[in-house]
Amino acid sequence: MYYLELAGEAGDEAFAALEAERAAASAVERVAPGLATARGIRADRVPTLAYTRRVSELVGRTDADVASAVAVLEAASFDRSGTVAVRARNVRATAEVSTSAAERELGGVLVDRGFDVDLDDPDHELRVCFADDVCLVGWAVAERDAAFGSRAPTDRPFFQPGSMAPMDARAYVNLAAGPALPDATVVDPMCGTGGLLVEAGLVGARAVGSDAQAKMASGAAENLAHYLDDDAAAASANPDWAAVRGDATELPFADDAADGVVFDAPYGRQSKIAGHELEDLVAGALAEAARIAPSCVLVADRSWTDAAEAAGWRVDERFERRVHRSLDRHVHVLKRS
Image 1 (cartoon, helix red, strand yellow):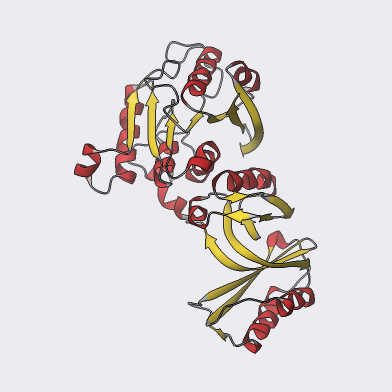
Image 2 (cartoon, rainbow, N blue to C red):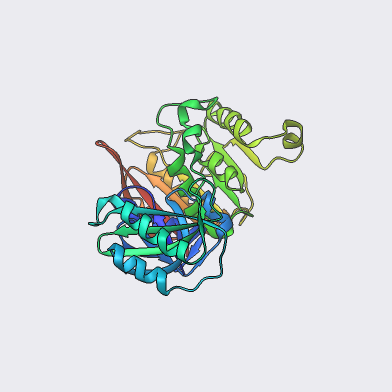
């Protein structure tokens, strides 16, 4: 068993748990604020998650007090040696506990069992998380690579207002194609500046996008080259990404060409978009997505459940996520019927 430290706000927990289960874990169950357990883990995929901070191998679960945590550790058996550090967290300040006392007393247990303490570069890290009335004790296994700040939309070579935050883009890619990653093809039929495709490429997928505006397709290609091409010559000869001008309702891809489709539908009440009424555009894109992939994540400013079902999708989950006062994102996690 393992336990996960979830990122984001309280309202993000169901979303975070599903992302982890789709891309890196099995049988994920939320057990306390900011914490979940998992039966299995793909440790190599944990660094690619957006809304899971860390994963630890579970030593034990107990009440949220230091004495109970000490008792769990004293009763545990493990085959480890070397140096150790103990890190304690009071998740969202929901437990009445002293983390410094926890680190001191659990560290003492480990010293008594032959470990040396090294707070800077330990061989092993014992993580102790208190949340509400639950305490989880475990050995750190993996943590996410949270370098999302270095890919802020405003830092990209090509930027347009309204671009999605990289952390959210990463999560949507994981929801759409997680089970097939890293050997997956991800398509964004309305790619805009390419933010979703950049994150798809960075988690190891082949990233393919189209946009009705030539300016956007060209800008997306510029961004993809910037973040994904280590060797320009090699990339041009055998690219792992592509961005082309195209109509989302008539995609130039073969049936079942992709493992997942992910797209951010136009917001607002525009009467015409690339020659289509908004309703026809989204319905057509959903139908094309169902033709080329078994899984899809649609992000929009409203529910498109009826259109998704009419296009041949089953809505597995739908989340409403606050962006700011005037915008909630509706996230539809779809599976082909």
